[in-house]
Image (cartoon, rainbow, N blue to C red; front, side, top):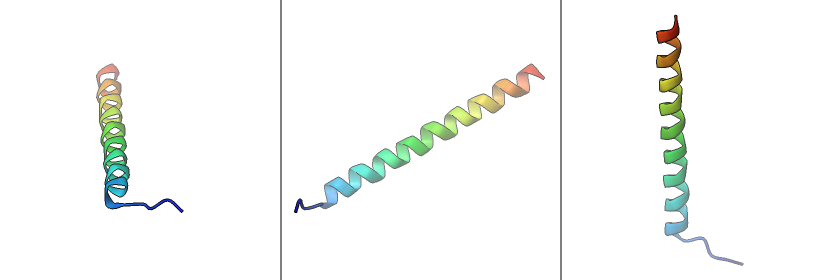
Length: 38
């Protein structure tokens, strides 16, 4: 069985945080654009 070491877990955590940050930024941009249109 392949061993899962700390570096693997760290990469998963980092990629998860990056996805979360990017999605929140996209949400903020979407809200800002929506407010400008109104």
